[in-house]
Each structure stands twice: as C-alpha cells, then as structure tokens.
Length: 211
Image (cartoon, rainbow, N blue to C red; front, side, top):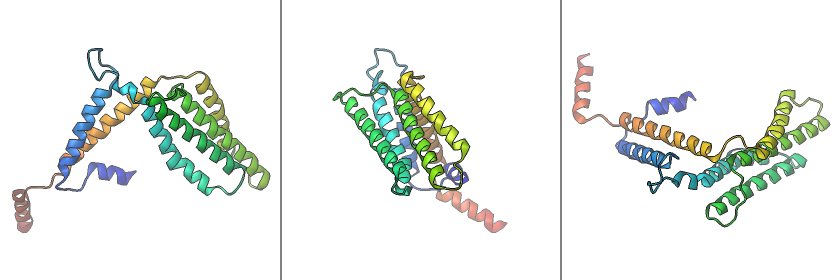
C-alpha cells in the first residue's frame, strides 16, 4: 500500500506527462456525463444507466480472473474444486447474460443487487462444503470464524437475491465517483510528473555547486 501511495504522490518525471492530464480531463468529462442527474433535454441523460450491465459484467470478470481462477488452480481434485468450477461457470454465464441484455438479446438480470446476492450465496455454499470436507479429512479444525462468515454469506446472499437493498443507480454512482477520483489523481500526477525546464535545472545545479 505504501508503494502505491508513493507512486501516486511522487510520480516519476516524464516527457509524456501531458497524457496523464489529457486522460484525467477525458475521465472527468465522462464521469460528469454518466451522472444520472441530467434532465430530459440532455441527449446523454440516460447514458449511465445504459452501461450499468457492462459495469456489472466487468466486475464479475475481474472477480473471476483475480480470485476464482486462483481458487480453482490451488484446489486438488475434490468436491470443493468441482463446486468452485460450477460457481465459475454460473457467474461467467451471468456475465455473458449481462452483455446479451445490454444488446437487448435476452433479459435475465434482476439488477446488480440480485447478482451480488447470487455471487455471495455461491461463495458461501462452496466455503460451507469446504469446511465439511476439511473437518472430515483433517485432524486440524476449520476456523470457526470463517465458517461463520460462510454461513452469513449464504444467508445474506439469499436475502439480497430475494429482496434487493439497492438499485442499479447506486452502482452507477459508485462507478462515477471512482472515475472522478481516478481522473483527479491522473491530472495531479500529470502536473507532478512534468520534468523541470532546462533553466530550472541549471539554477539547481548552480545552487548545488555553491553548497
């Protein structure tokens, strides 16, 4: 975390500093246009809601690639691995369904909250089975706190799927805020990454020689 913060607060100087600024400005414009606050006269007033399905799809793909793939690769040939593969296939189909729904081919999704509930339920069920088989085949006990978390994931996942707590507008606002924050960081880094001019370098070199 410290390395990431240092890179953000102290970027390396580069002649391509202007690309940070340009990308930051474009991100600010995109974030403002995607806000679900525009009146009916604005042609872009529903652009944000139109890409919510793609945002959900991107989140699922990141979860599959960064988390579930590692889980599948680290598991031995067992029931838990089979269940993890089934979880991967189910979420991959949901991601595909979000894409198809975006192009109005099919209509499968009940919203981001329901999809989140389904993903939590799948993860909780897999962890409960893992606790059972771990306890059955090993002398060391499965962590009770992790089993409690798995049961909570199952229960809360079912609740979110049956009765969503938030709408897709919340997902869009989170996405917009993230875009704006990243854009501001890019603009700031672009300003900090600007290399010093030749005159400034000469003045600094003279000061060092005097010291």
